Length: 177
Image (cartoon, rainbow, N blue to C red; front, side, top):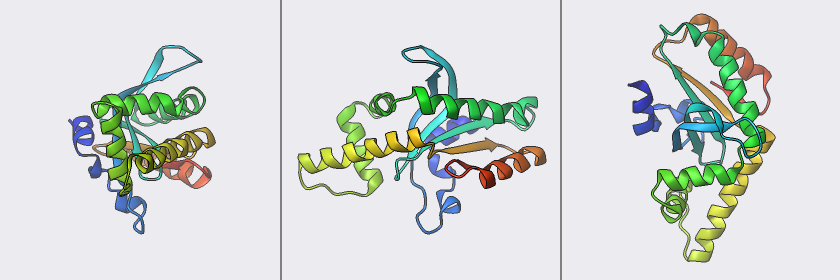
């Protein structure tokens, strides 16, 4: 249920709490987004939700029930696997293809991105430039590890909260929340 709610209403992930000056606007790229573990290999894992924000920052969302015994340590390792592997083996073109699938084609995805950015291109060339620049930013962010890892649960155990806070304080380019 929680996974479906996030997919249908990503704004539930309170972007204003992440950045009150520039609240995060979410774009769901794919639910159960497959992540390969090598060049030209098939998907080995899947992150519950892959989101992008208006800054082209990839966001991985993993959802667990508090009753799931894996919520403490295993979920942290799981997310780190996703992030490390996606940084190497997930080209922005693949994410772009997922966006095209999600929004009913490349043109529709392009317009959705323009809306996310609050941009108002006056011609097709300008629209194309805005969209291409956005995808370049996504690629750069992914390669440089400028990503966000969100752990979502009906209730976060104290131990997991402590790990998340520690990682967020220690990691410079990765936001862990």
